[in-house]
Length: 89
Image (cartoon, rainbow, N blue to C red; front, side, top):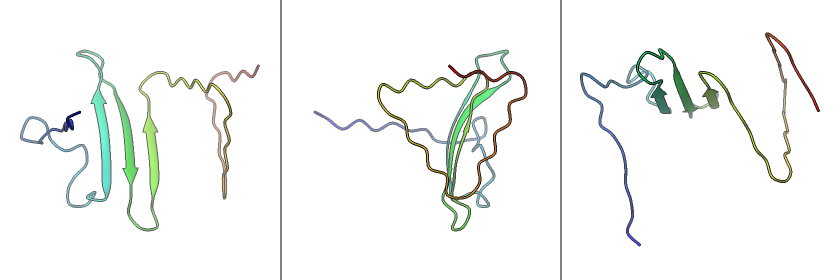
């Protein structure tokens, strides 16, 4: 087995997704929709002390498939907003 290292370098055409150094505590994986799509998907991790956050943006759908159990613990508040319909089975 050989290690596999992947990455990219930002340059004039492909710039960082958030301004530096103001957002130096963020790790961002952001992909653009195919040509003509105009959207994006994003996974962002903020590690600034007191503002830690994991943010997920799906341009269209987000599907989860959990084969066994799921547990959610919210230590403070939880806010849910559904702008159209909500279904439970």
